Amino acid sequence: MAVSLGPSSDLRAQHKLMRENQELQRQLAQSKQDFRDLREKFLVSKATAYSLANQLQKYQCEGHRDIIESVLGEKLEFKVVKLAERLAEDPAELDVLIHAQARELTQLRQKVKEGRDDCVLLSFEGRTHGIWRLPG
Image (tube, rainbow, N blue to C red; front, side, top):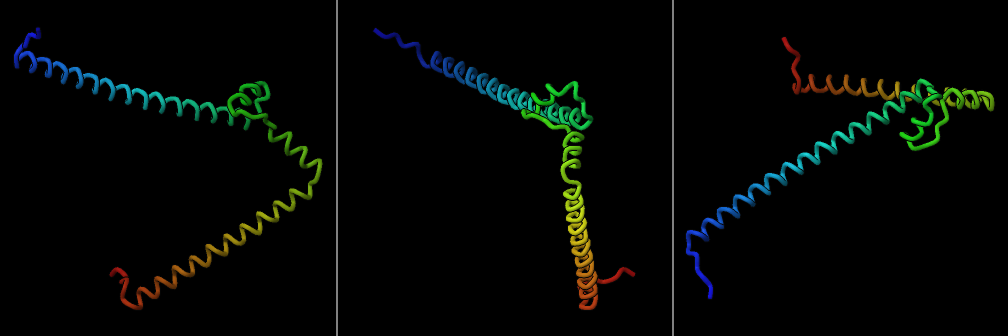
């Protein structure tokens, strides 16, 4: 035999469930925010560790090579050793690279000059057709 508790107890139970649901929703939102904060801190820490490892490599801290390798996840060759080996092997190779970079720089300068010329021409055309007016 079931006993009916009446509409007031049903209403109280519904209110209690709604409050519990709201509290759980609030806790879930807070947990999600905490997770995002922790993930951001982790990524910042990871980037910082990577940056520091690169700085150690840059300043050739041979004593900290194991740390650098563990952070960067690779075997490292310090730049001085690599450069010395390359120079010993073929100094003409570096000369070729320097000339290639000089050619590229010349091409970039030419593009900048052409862009500047186009700007002057466009500006002149705009003024002559009344699109732009000079102040004054």
